[in-house]
Image (cartoon, rainbow, N blue to C red; front, side, top):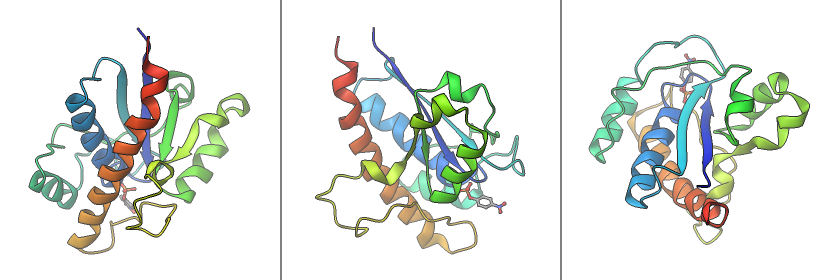
Length: 165
Ligand code: 4NP
């Protein structure tokens, strides 16, 4: 059975990447692809290792039926570049931080989440990044959810052809 493994990456692994993980898990379950699409998340920084997702991220996610409570922050490690097929970053700074520690032969695995938003979806005007909500208000966490939902739908559609067979 063909599988693909994905790690979502942000800075702290307490706001954006756990949100992407929670959204992706649900959409993958709904698509009956849980055995084929393996999902994790990590941060490029080390401040929140072992911490649950930010309470604001959990609250916003709960409002849409996603439960992030069991997730814990961790930092990206060298082995992750071998373990995962795709490392999907939230912003350009995450990409730059990943590129510094990623072996040259694995660099093609690094992508931006917003690349997977379908072109027809003009809500973010072709934005490249999921903006860091940490120092802002509650609306930032809702926007992160909107972006994760749109991009993860596109990501599943992009992965389907490689999961056939
Ligand atoms: P995240 O958000 O990268 O989406 O998890 C942040 C979490 C923590 C910090 C910054 C961004 N921080 O500065 O501690």
